[in-house]
Amino acid sequence: MKQIKYILLSLVLIPAMSHAIFRIYTGTIGQDNAEFYFVDDENAIYLNDEEHQVKELNSLSKHNDIFNYEVSYVYSSEVLDKIVIENFDRGIFNHDADAYQYLTGHSLNGDKINLHEIFKYKKYDERSLREAEFNNIDYLQQHSTKDFYFKVIVSKKKNEEANIVGIKIY
Image (tube, rainbow, N blue to C red; front, side):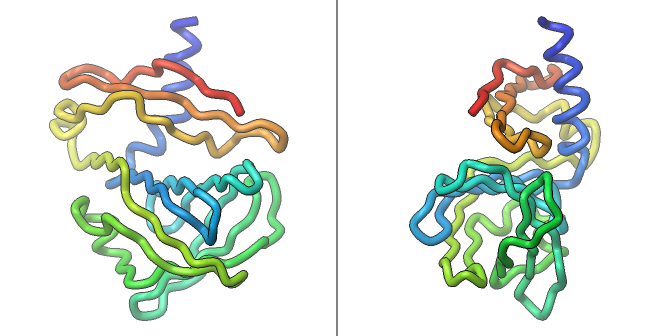
């Protein structure tokens, strides 16, 4: 079982965390609760309480300070909606970990989006990686199935490797 946890950690978590800043936001889309997992400004995944299915955000374009994303199910290329994040600067988002505590915007379906950051992990160099500490962070897995999705629960102590401490299946 321990070997399976290490394999999962290597295959699933480490590639996502090798980017400059990994962020998790929670909030609402319209009346529904939502969780957003940004690996970078180009791509993200999210889950809302209405459908309980993992959706993918793919960057369309950036005009001034507005960023547009297409929304689709992870296992499909059909565009379900578009999301606009307002007052958004790609350079700042990717390099300033203290920026963007809150994200606001709307979907083309008319739902208002309000998100606040609950976790960020920045990896600039090996020292930053060693110094990082976090406890029981739920990490939504992009490659879940159509009928089920899962989250890996990860913890990391200073000067130690990150460890999978649990898995939640929904």
